[in-house]
Image 1: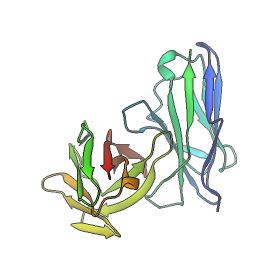
Image 2: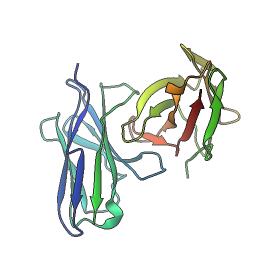
Image 3: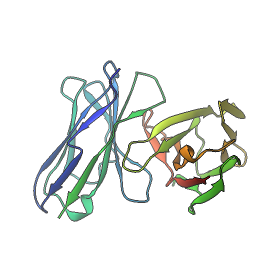
Length: 113
Length: 113
């Protein structure tokens, strides 16, 4: 079956612009996670959805970051007023309810100039 | 604060040998620990999960140990192959965050023919 997909695969934007990153989880997976990975580092947790609601958004670095999952499947990570320090790989993962194993997408590489 | 440490230096080994990667953690009492593989520019791929009450787990050429007293996990790849070359990430469950994961920085493994 289809895995987790993320679009776009690459995004180049200018400082101060707004960006949206999309994640399509595996069908039927109720849990969805966003992570951010900088070069040479492990993925860093941002936010976790169970169904439509954000169960934990404690990893979002500041209020410029926001994520939604209105119908419990596709999720969008939104970044306002982008800064150069936001440049990173943004990873999405999904899992069935109650499962510890996560299935990651290929990521979106964001570059803020 | 919770901290995960993995060998920061790359591990270079010859094909056919056993690769051993280390994951140490502090200020943690994880319910389980996972190992993921990550290839350049790709999302992590789940390999193995070991629970706190398990000492060892195997899957084909992979073996993971979990010592909750030492707060350490060892990840072994036996009869290593050049195709095993990748970065290997250790991940622990984040407390109070459902199943969100806290990742180490990863260890880069290079298997040469």
